[in-house]
Image (cartoon, rainbow, N blue to C red):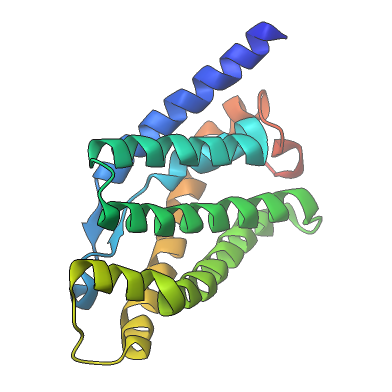
Length: 196
């Protein structure tokens, strides 16, 4: 029992460190909002979902964000970004977990359905969050002034950003999953519902 718990903790720590490293390899995709950057740090988190369940996936997310914030000196703009990152990771975790647990249709549609649900969730929830508190708070902290409305920024930047992020991260994870499926099938908690 203790050995199993130790292996779980070590695995979560290692995946969290991998997620942190991938978070550093970020790049902008929307010129009008260059501070919004895509990274692939959610890939280790989704792997952790298969290995350790939702609790493990959220623990990996926290490890990633604590490491990132610590290296950035816990600066307020970075903490705002970490909050947005946490919400994005949470949406992906929940969407994939729900589909993998409760979808009983044709297995070949399971992963596309998870990606679609995650992408829709990202677009809707991140848009509302940015409209109501993330962007207003970030702009106040950074002293930014827009030459257009916040609604316009959400429409032309936040919506397409999260649409691209959901599809890109989801499909990259699908490719990684296909490579690791045999190994994951021996260890994870959810794979019994996923087709090989």
